[in-house]
Length: 326
Image (cartoon, rainbow, N blue to C red; front, side, top):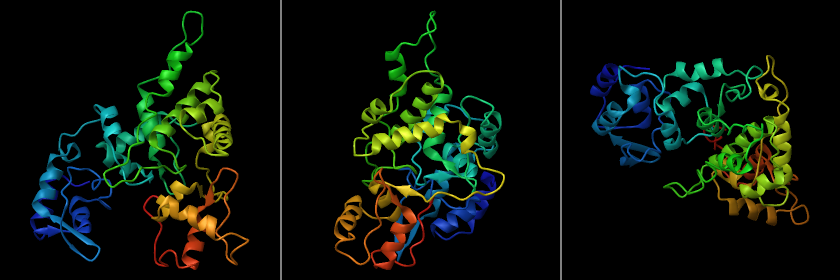
């Protein structure tokens, strides 16, 4: 990461209107995707085709005001507030992107993974995939409960369900409201950050011996479509088996196809959920020689199959690359 003096020097030779690529290069980043959702980040002043131009001086002023640009930047402070305020564009992020999003050093994020490894602690830091990326919604949930542990048992060794329930549902409503662009952020499982937070807390509660029925949980977080309660039960059973089983292995193993329900799939492919549902209803085995891929028992579709079908049937540009975080 460049120092603020290095950044000022780089900006000094840029034109008055700068592109995202120029901003990223001048600040020593790969991209600025985590900055653009911030309402205080300078907006568009001009456009040429798909290229957006921003005011150079406004961008530099914004950058200099951020905590991560300070030379005396230290470890995490008021981290919960930063986590709650974060509005990432990506679903999966590497440690560098997480550090940038949360205004931390990359080393600070690595420290969490080192101090709370899977298989050695009861609530390990979320695992990474083969690309070194981890789920933002999992990291968010972990950081929020890290200093907000499950209510302790009373003198008789039992926990009060009302207290546990309040703890489980503390952040349930997070992320349910649409963003400024009208979209709702959904994670790799098609869940809001609030729904994922409840599920992750339920996992901790179950590991502590507290019965959290999947049927109650599904209703509490509004997973009420056919098959969703069963899908949630399977997810919890997998996580109950131990987070060590979810860690990246030393050697690659065959990966299950990525599957998403209509809303998450639509977001992944840059479409509307109603469009996905329309294709599924219209292009069926009984009406089309090339039917839309079938959904499974949890109403989820194979992402790769859906993308290939859309391209094959000219419903999606052939040169469209997978969205960031895919």
